[in-house]
Image (cartoon, rainbow, N blue to C red; front, side, top):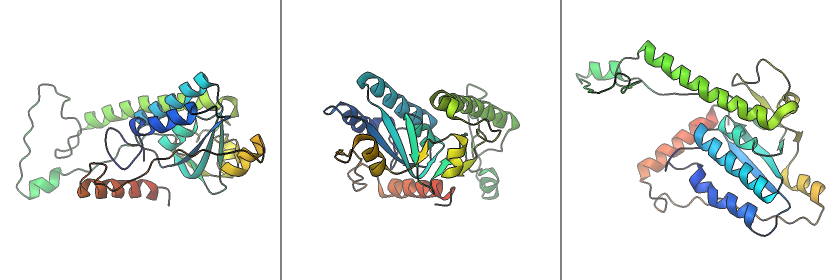
Length: 245
């Protein structure tokens, strides 16, 4: 998952920046390959990570290739667009170019249990979408407006990076997903293939790989409580489950 702030487990610009920087700056790499397996998450963090990759690729004059494993959906696909070429497995799930916001409403629950919600604000929109108060049509309309702005930013990123490779299709930016060859036919990926054989084909049989990856230590080492670790794991599990994984 791509997450905001210090939430864990998950990816964000702060915790992957050192790895990305080393990948581009250590020695003189012929190329940088991104191995992506993400159901998405924070659009801002997706944008920040992708922008960092593009800045370094331009600065170091290094080509970037993305290899999708199980899924590159939503923010995961945003990361893939940072590459010059995108590869996937026949069974990879790709796409979901859209924006989602999910939550729960507890207003009826607390009313049944005799709990009174008290909120005091100095701005009429300050308590927008409070889960402990009845949903307001104006709040929902405002949320949709914000989502549309983020969606347009996502679309612009995909169009900018994929360009003429994209096939004109009414469903391309609806949040729809495709598997392997379907994503290829839409221009969302460049080919079906895997990291090692593809890189050997491009750079010769003697190509050497230097791997940079995050190590997930015990939750205690990350400063998380057991509750935080379990909550993060459940959220991540739910995100993958949306795609049948």
